Amino acid sequence: MSRLAWPFGAKRHDLLRGGLRWQRERGRSDIATRTRARGRQSVIFVLMALALGSLGLRTAYWQLAQQRALAARADRQHLRAIAINAGRGMILDANGHELALSITEDTVIADPDVIREVNALDTTAATLARVLGQPAALMRRELNVPGAYVQMRGADGKVVRLSSAASALLSADIEGGTLAGVALIPSVRRVYPNGALAAQTLGFVRASDGAGQYGVEQQLQATLAGRPGLLYTAVDANGDPLATGPQRQVPAVPGADVMLTLDANVQYWAEQGLAQAVAKTGADGGTVLAMDPHTGAIIAMASLPAFDPNAYGAASLASFVNPAVSDTYDPGSVMKAVTMAAGIDCGAIAPGSAFYDDGSVVVDGITLHNWDHRAHGEETMTQVLQNSANVGAVWVAQHIGRDRFQSYLASFGFGAPSGVDLPTEAPGVVQSFATPGEGDLEMAESAFGESIAVTPLQMVAVYGALANGGALMRPYLVARVAADGGQGAVTHAEPHPVRQIVDPATAAKVTRMLVDSAYASEAQMDLLSGYAIAAKTGTSTPDPRHPEQTYASVIGYAPASNPRFVLLVKLDHPTETIFGGSAAGPLWRQLAQQLFVYYRIAPDAQAPAASNAP
View 1 (cartoon, rainbow, N blue to C red):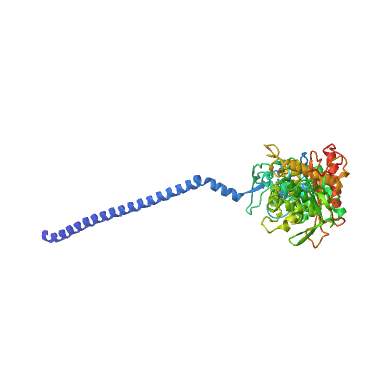
View 2 (view 1 turned 120 degrees about the vertical axis):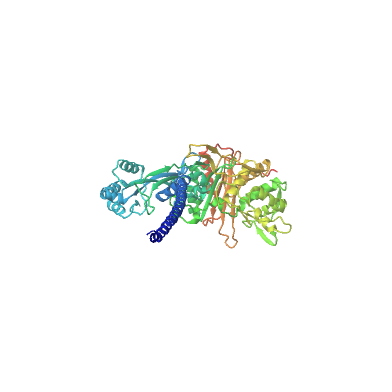
């Protein structure tokens, strides 16, 4: 049995050993499996940890580092910044009268969806119609539209601007909750209470962007405009403001108030007188300038054609330009006083210097005549002014010489801007005649006011220098600037001497010559009895083919003993009478008489006897 059992036992033994081996191998396999599983779990854990860490860092980056940028982006998406125009500074005349001011007016915005939600379309339309003075049916149509924003417009199609009373009524209703979906937005509008008065000097403010155009409005744009504020209001998905959305505001800083040297009374007399003179003489237009010769302060600056800055859109572009500073003309015989001043100052002549005037002179093969084609015979320099003799002026220029005469014209300020505080000032044109053998004709014609182009302001500045002892003053228009709508720091303008152009003794001699000339010439300034007037007439013909088209002018200062004003009257192409004395003289005398009364200027002398003193 034992032998029979052994094989069976051996087999069983082998099976037992095989089972143990299988168990050991299975255990090793389980261990390896568990090891691999733990490895995979570790990798997954590490990856999850890295992912969570990255997510945490990313979250911290957006929530902390980018918080402001994200908030700003959200604001841009949900808030709209509406510019609130600063109160533009006022422009005042020398006496504090308002020439330009800004009016802040509210406009109405409404949210039709909100109004419909509260079933208030009819009542809101009725309230707006009553307060705005518009038809109720129109207001209902304005409100009964899809969308979340409308700006109320009147029957004329323009945005309705509220009076202060209307704003107060609507504000009370809005705050009281009876006008859901309605809000007020402030807007600023420029107003010129005197209409066209000094329009070309003031300029205007463009309605589309609030920018100053022409004149003082353009020159002092940054000063007058101030700094705009911002109104942040919630917008819908289309970017339209929600009348009921949250709002916040950055206040605007008002512009500075500007006081000018202009006197509105004198400006009015100048403009009214100029309009009458233009109509009476059939002129195309004209210019009147008045200035204080001791400071350069401009008292009046009037030109025609003009425009109303309240309705600038109806005016022509040409009327915006200020001819007093931007247009040039041949001054004619008023230049002869300048030629005399140069000749006396350099010692080439004296008031009593004499020459023989045969009525014409040949220069570079061209014959130049006196304006009346008359020969005056023996005459002094004072008589040259009295007779307004072209030949005498040429004689003086030739004795001065090309180089010196060219230098004097530059010193007087011709050919360069005066520096007045206005935009687009023209420099004028002075021919070059300093080269030997060239320019003799140009020099000769410049001596009596042809072949030279000047602005009216340049001419006034030069006569102002003759009036004050020979000092060329820079003309100026802005007298004072008060920051922050007149409540801040105040800056005053100071007179600015440019240079001494002639000796005081020269200026005194030329003044005496002009007084004698005004008394004895066709200008007839002696009609202003009791006052010594230093004045000269001018008649220029820029186009020889049309001798009837002239610039007729009178320029002078008074009283001669202590000048209070220098005054220019210039008419462009008069037709009824074409000469300076007869066309411009009557208005010059009228305005001078008004200034004597207005400034309470006492008479300084009786009409003088002609003087030929050296």
